[in-house]
Structure formats: structure tokens, C-alpha cells
Length: 568
Image (cartoon, rainbow, N blue to C red; front, side):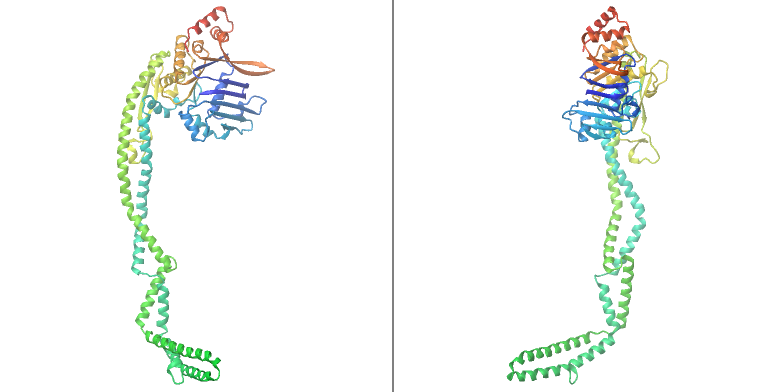
């Protein structure tokens, strides 16, 4: 509920504060006193666009503040807490309007955006008036009103949940189908590449080993001749190196008896002789392994040509070719799995679509029944508000379908939306013999206010808004009808905080709290003030509303009689 409202330097208001309570509060005053300005201030608090033209003359800024007291379980509290606001001391909304256009918004002392403010304030208050922006007038909101009236918000929520669940599956299915089409050529290429690499039967470092073998085969004659010559020089020929070294070792060992220090040197020479024999044996073995094979040379060359071609195609090295082959196999495996994935997704979509269709049909059927009841109740309420003979109808139309609609979002050629398969319009004919027209086209402010009042009375126990504000609800009415309007506002105040601006005493008498708005000239400037009325002051204001400028004893008695008969 709205607990306090403060307005500074706004239009003709220099500094005004109001404390509101639960129940029905009425605001009265002469025409032009500033009642509409107060409503403009509340609208700004609730998120409407600000303009520097609203700033009081000679001032640079205007400030608006509203303190709301929110039950912890209310939708408004949930929205505020979701934005990280602590509501232990309420919700304080502050707007600063500046002539330079740099307006600021603060929520509980924290700088906020208009979007955040609108998100929270959606459930704080609703203003009903001839020129106010009315949620109930928006055709897109009529379906929600019908569902609230029929107690169908839970079923509607189930439809929305299934709708939200089916959307990503539809996108996934479309993506898989698209991939299957796009990957058809890719699959052929990958199959060829995998076959080519697999057929090559590659092994790590095979190219390096083959290049070495090719060199040996090309130069086999030279290798055999040179290695054979070296082996003979070391060991095989007369006067070979091994013979000379062995002789040197013997001679040094013979001198060991003369100088024992030569013994180590003699040992090392002997070891060298043995090593040279081992080297000669290795060379002999190498000679035996040398291959003179032109066919093998040709085969190695062809193999190297194949490896070189693969390296050029798949990354420049044999390791890159092997890596590409593995990646291609994995990609091919995933592509091959696409049809299976698509089938699995379609099966899930079929099951979910059937459940969604059942829920949509159930919701639509219950809406039809609720629409009949709502139409009857609205007509009944309007009759009591002086609009007897008014026809009210909830007209259904299917959700639209375009050529690109997905089959899983269709039900018998109707589109399936998050709200189901229905769209509705509230149609009304206020006068007998007139055609039904959309609610938003109603021209009369008095008729419009009463229609909205009737809807709000009907939805009183189901609406989530904490505070209801009525401006010009008394336009075009009077007498007994005005008293009925007052009674309904009083009844509405059992479920919501209700604030009503009125010119009629028949309505004002039902207010639990009464505030008077007055415009005065102070030091050459126009000022609007507001004051709570009680006792004799309230009687005088009621008398003014009854009798105009001149208040007589008879008028005062009439006002006392009205107030004595009221029940709050």
C-alpha cells in the first residue's frame, strides 16, 4: 500500500506531503485545485515519462517521493527482492526531474533505471481515470483478466511452462534438419578423406624412415665399395691398421719391465686394437645388409610420393595427417548421428505437443464458461452503476498463424502461444441499439470509469495490485448512482487500499479518510496544499460539495445526515 507521498516543486505544488492509510481515502477540492497534478505525480512514481515542463516556475528541479509498505508475499515485493532491494523498511521510490533533462530515479536510495522501476511498480498501484493509461483497456491484457476471474491462472501457467519447454526443442529440431542438409556434401568429402587416410596405413615417422632407406638404395654401390675398402684397411688387407696397433701394444708391454709407467699406455693401445677389430666386424655386417634392389627403390619412391601428397593436403606433416584423420572420423561420426538425434527430438516433441494441446483445449473450454459468467457479472455491476441495458461480451478469436509457423506450435490451424490458443477482446455497447465496440473505443469518460470500476470490483479478491486509485470515477453520474459507486469503492477497500478523487459528496461520504486539496495565493505565487479532514471540517467540506459557494445551515444539516448514516 501507498504509505506516504511527497511532492516538491512540481507544477503549482511547492511542498506537499500526504500520509495514507488502509481502506478508502477520498480526495476532494475545487476544480483546478491541483487534484490532477497529484495524479500526474503518482503516475511518474509508477514509471511514466518525465518532462522538464512539469517543474515549478523558477525552480531547477522537482522531486517526487513515495513510500510503499509491501506484504512479503505480494508480487510487488517479489519483483523488488528479485532486483536486490531490502524491504524491511518498505520501498521508497524517489524521482528527480531536472530542467536539463537529466532525470534520476532512486529506489531505497539506490540509483535505478526506468525499466527497473516499471518492473517493480507493475504490481504497486493502478490508476483508473479518463485520461490514464489503463491496463484493463489493453486488449492484450483482457485474456489475463478473464483468467484471473475464472481462477485459471494456474492452468495458464502450466500451458506457459509446456510452451517454454517446447520452444528450445523446436529450435534444436530445426537446427538438426538444417545441419543434415548442409552436411550432405560435407559427409561425402569426409568419407573420401577418411578412406584415403585409412587406406594409406600410415605410421608415425614413416616418411623419415623411408627417406633414409631411399638414400641407401640410391647409393648402395658407393656404400658397398667405400665401406669394403675401409674394412680392409682396418683389418683385412696385409699391413692393416689393426696389425700395426697390435704390434705397438706388444712392444710397449715388453718395456713394462724397464718402466712400469708405460703399462697403462700399453693397455690403452691394446684396447684400441680390440675396438678396431669390433669396428671391422660391424663394417663387415653392414656390407652384408647393403641391398641392391631397384624394385624396392621404386616402391619406396612411390610410397614417399603418396606421403608427400597427403601431407600437402592435410597439414604439412605426417603427424598432422594422422590428427586430421582422427578429427574427420569424429566429425563423420557426429554427422552420421544427426538423423538419430533428429528422430529422438521429434519423439520428444510429439509427446510434449500432445500434452500442450490437451492443456490448451482444457484452458480454452474453461475460458468459454468463465467468459459467459464474466459478461453477466459486468452487465449486472454496470446496471447498478446507472448503465442499465449495457451489453458486455468477451469475444474470442484464435491466435494468428502465419506461413512460417512451426507445426508443433499449431492446433487445428490455430497458433499455440504461451497463453494458449485464444485471444479475447472485451466488447461493449453502453446504449441500447448500439453495436458492440472494443472497450478502448469508449468515448465517455464517465462510462469508461464505471466500466473499469465494475471490472475492478469483480476482480477485487483476485487482483494482485496493492493500491487502486480512481480519478474521475464520478464523471457523468450523480444521485443514487453516485451513492452506489461509493458503496462499491468502500466494498473494494476491504481487499485493496483505495484512493479516490471525487467531486460528489455521495461518494466522498464513504471514505474512511478524507483529504481536502486547496489552491491558494501565497506571496504572489500559486500553491496547492492538502490537509486531512475530520469532524466539523469534514462536514463543512461535504456541505460545500452539496451546496456550492454559499453554505447554509440546511446544507450543513444535510452533510451531517449523510455522514451520520455512513458505515466504514
